[in-house]
Image (cartoon, rainbow, N blue to C red; front, top):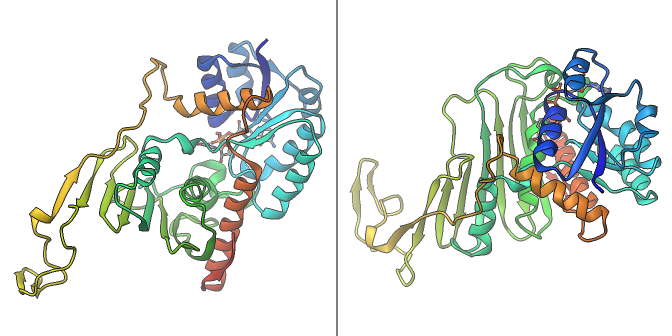
Length: 359
Ligand code: NAD
């Protein structure tokens, strides 16, 4: 029999979970709980039960509670649902502090339910291409990875503009980008340096640059901007044997690889360029490199109305994890690491210095 779920918070993302689950068909959403009456009509049209309070959700037949409310309200819902023996899918960031998350994890470890977080960007096309570039060693060991999300809308939508609700871009996008980066290497984060700005927002960060150092020597730049009118590529990877660029979410881009056997050192001859005479910055001789396409990853082609590639994988895993057939994909210790990096980033920005750590 299909598992049943209730969605708490039937706004943008709550409705997305509902639509995704309708299309995927693995879990039946039986109802919603929301504090805003405006959404009740939308839910009723979808034949969803509208629960009058959270206690009624806990007493319902749903085994799974999906929490998609603003960031500051996740914690209590997670704890109550886990204490009631439910499985919990919480939207990211699950909490605003490591301490709060540790409290949830402590409850989760004594409960029958699974606790997981919707880190859906683990299935993004661009990210899976990066994983493949590294796993297939296409540019050799990377020493710099740059991961950027550049928007230009300038304003932050709704509660995202308010500190009390856990607004701001480090919590909103940072949590995704950091989660992805921590999956790329088994190494520990050993330093965090952050520049966190509120350029247009009065309360929260809308422009962030974060530099992470890893114990294996990798350095990572994370950039999130809501007011960048000339965007950078989504990814830029520098490895000893080449450079890879992924321009966008569709996964377009290219790799320039050093040809095997070609000597990476330059001849002694001075090259005259627009920058003046230079050996170091002169363009590389074409015969020493080759352009290769980005590796292919599975693309979404199921004929669904929306792109529910991530939802299909996330929820298949959840059902299998509940049935004891698979390990849950988004694990508690992984979520905790992401939040520890975010906390270190806020601290670094505040003291305007580098935070040394082992995360
Ligand atoms: P939203 O404002 O569109 O929707 C939030 C809904 O929660 C609203 O309907 C609101 O009435 C309701 N709500 C507010 N406080 C509540 C409370 N205390 N109890 C019950 N209902 C409450 O916000 P959104 O964009 O859907 O974001 C919701 C969550 O989803 C956030 O944590 C956000 O970070 C996350 N999110 C995740 C992704 C992703 O890709 N994983 C994308 C967008 C948003």
